[in-house]
Amino acid sequence: MKAHLITYGCQMNEYDTHLVESQLVSFGADIVQGVDEADFILINTCAVRGKPVEKVRSLLGDLRKVKAQRPLVVGMMGCLAQLDEGQQMARKFGVDMLLGPGSLLDIGKALESNERFWGLAFRDELHDHVPPPPVGKLQAHLTIMRGCDHHCTYCIVPTTRGPQVSRHPDDILRELDSLLAAGVQEVTLLGQNVNAYGVDQGARLGGYPSFANLLRLVGRSGVRRVKFTTSHPMNFTEDVAAAMAETPAICEYVHLPVQSGSSRVLRRMAREYTREDYLRHVADIRKHLPHAVLATDIIVGFPGETEEDFQETLSLYDEVGFDSAYMFAYSPRPGTPSYKHFDDLPREVKTERLARLIARQKEWSARKNAAKVGTVQELLLRGDAHDSGFLEGHTRGNHPTVVPKAVGVTGPGVHRARIEHATPHMMYARLIDAQGNDLPELPNLNPEAAALSAPLTLA
Ligand code: SAM
Ligand code: SF4
Image 1 (cartoon, rainbow, N blue to C red):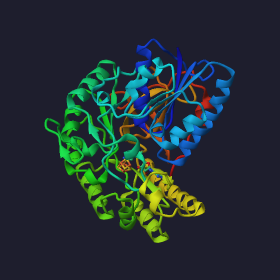
Image 2: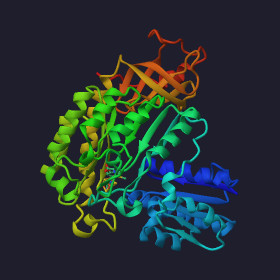
Image 3: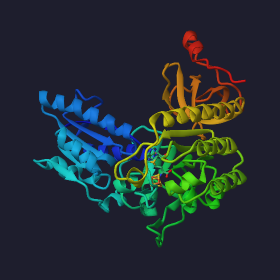
Image 4: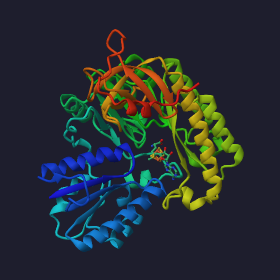
């Protein structure tokens, strides 16, 4: 079998794709990089907003045409597969197998089945399953929990991924050991609400540490860098900031989605915190980590959001001074409370507010990144940048960064570099040695490419 997997959506989906891909490899499949070479195509889907759903619909339309020409098995996994919306799409486009987020380990049964296979159960065995480490990668994801116990009114995730189930710490540490043995240097702990780790459906689980203590355990394991996502402000505790400050391996990067700066909108979203609560968390983080890099998620144009509410989001952005943000226009999702009970705002209102927020975010990212010029940052370099004379990677604070290759540093690895230029979304740096001296650039670096890559310097 020649299998090709296509992933939409979040880091959780990337992790799940890796899990299923490693199952396929264990059954003897070859993983191929293109549709044309494949006789089995598995799409890992996202249902959080309308856009990724439409992308899957259009891809399934294309694959139906390919299926009419030659033998091809098409499967859908992930959030959309769990929903009626996805199942209707699957019937319409002749999809052969569906695997919901709780049924990923049914992939073997699905392949053996001679008829259409629909796997939609939430199976316990997924939680203690440890996938093999990714091959030749310095970065890896590690799921510490699945599902979500919150009920944000706009969000489909609790329906698609079910209630929260924390993985046992022994399974997490076992998986971590295998990642370390494979040479992984940066591990990102994943969950919809990592701060609620160990408290499932309101009950604290015996033998499970708090999230702050899990961070301490993971941070002392010998791993070089630890990140985590996503934090929910409702469950964020000051002890998490304290654990970050006292554990050098934990990167000083916090992704804390606020969604809106208006307490009135937050209430309608059922986020279970106010603007003031959020600002208190930011103050706690800054108390322990004055140089923390802060990222957030924001939804604009939630039903009923007034211009005044939106102004509160802009003013919160200024008050916090986020380094970066994932920004979305509200997308009504069938099956969510806000879809059922609230009227959507006109599209023009949403897109206009989104454009204003993006402009604000760019100003802040420019300012924050410019302040890093001249500082020394630890970079995890993944490999060649767009131009092969350069390497691309990211800092401990998740800033995408490009460096010219240097004598002794021409491939992936963790290195120190001095930031020389910055734009709102990219940093440009020069590699340095342990004494802080510039490493000599490779002599054959193409000067034209270097000029092209030279970024704007921010005032
Ligand atoms: N569990 C995380 C949290 O609570 O912050 C977020 C997970 S969700 C998959 C990722 C992001 O998608 C959310 O933070 C939110 O900003 C966005 N999102 C979710 N539902 C949305 C919707 N209906 N419309 C627009 N954005 C949405
Ligand atoms: Fe969705 Fe809210 Fe759960 Fe995040 S916390 S996954 S936004 S319901």
